[in-house]
Amino acid sequence: MCNKQIDFRWRYQPCQSMDVQLMNYIQSSRITGKTQMMLVAVRSFWLTHAIANYSDDEKEVQRIAQSCIKALRKQAQEIVELAGLEDIPLTFLTQNSIQSRSNNHYCDRPTNEIENNIYDDTGLSNFM
Image 1 (cartoon, rainbow, N blue to C red):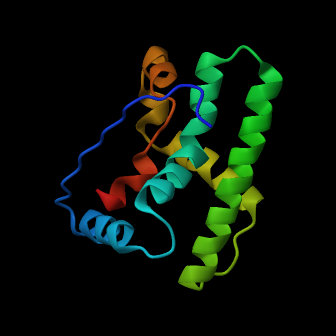
Image 2: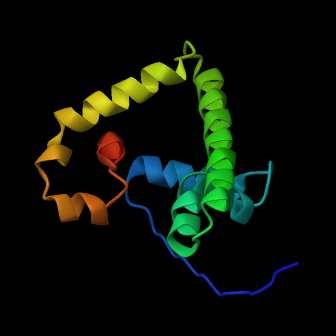
Image 3: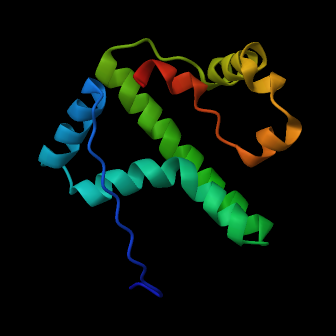
């Protein structure tokens, strides 16, 4: 049961071929509805940001963060299996992301810009 409803509309007309494939897959999926697919993907990463932004309850933020991390790990494992990749230990991924942050322009940005843009999407540049 919803405590409070809001109306959220998002319209997207992809031009990039990968985005077209992605949107076609989401639209035609018989696994689950497109709203549920989008929410799972968005919640996994952004929910912790939203809760941390609106809550002073550190325990709640940590509980949500742990749940999101679990979902992201599950998604990563599914991607590994789907693509037939060798499983990469999480510790390697963490060390690799720290190194890539220090090797890109992220460290050259002014401090206030880093704080205002928590999510660095330079790792997705090959998709755009």
